[in-house]
Image 1 (tube, rainbow, N blue to C red):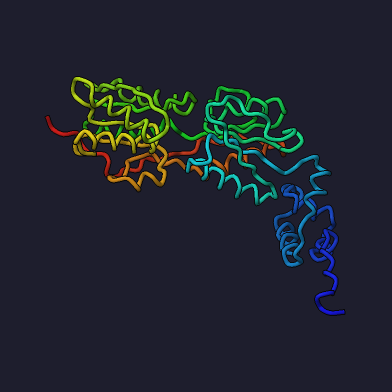
Image 2 (cartoon, rainbow, N blue to C red; image 1 turned 120 degrees about the vertical axis):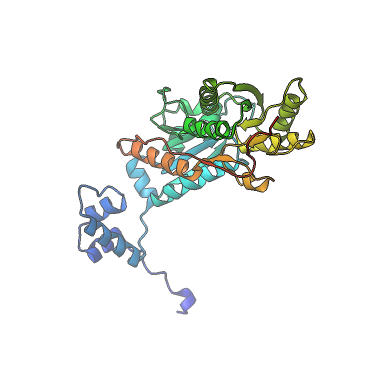
Length: 342
């Protein structure tokens, strides 16, 4: 028989791994199913994993899923596939999922079309749980009825529907922005707010109002715009065309709106930051692609995804899924400076 016709060698089994590691098959199952803590020593767990790796052992995930009644699949619901922030959230979630032999299906919320239909014939049969951005809650109508564990990202802690939630310290981020601008001497401030009605943007508005209200001589005006560059530019052009002294600083709910604000300032023949300072939020790649580069708040998007997937795994295994808010950090670049004198 030629080498091309040689039968493939048999796949190693859990019994082979147990024999190589000198343990029982039950111990192999515990270790490779990530349920060994408190039952097996860490040195034994390492020995089992090493033996499985040396033998090239791969568990039969289909059979395991049937035994556990699970599909080992999570759904990540986001507002849009084109937004860099949510692409990074997916990257973080998928990395943690892969470590636990899970898959992540990415599902974008339809924009302006109301609640989405169940993306599967039956979400309950096809999924183990759902991770969703608060900006995509309109897509959860059919999924809520499936009785699946739900982990919310960047959402209202008082909303008791979710089994767990992962939040960023958004309020502290906006306080950092306000403190930076007020410290530079700015008193006439415009808030270019997102027109999306969701918890994360409500927190930004509230934190900015709190930071400005007790500062003598400081004023804050709020205008809203859709989350795109053109809408942000139009909103700021309207502000700069209005009678009265222009703002010396524009605080934007995200970097996309900030890019639009910078365009509007330049179209009026003004300078950023010489005449008007502009700040963003998120620290997308766009923040360093524009000129001048944006002062913005850095959000750890990949960590949001990692924590979201970890929280879902905790819920599925009956473990506590409480996680502290992720810290955020102001990154000062060239789009902010002291206001012009007189």
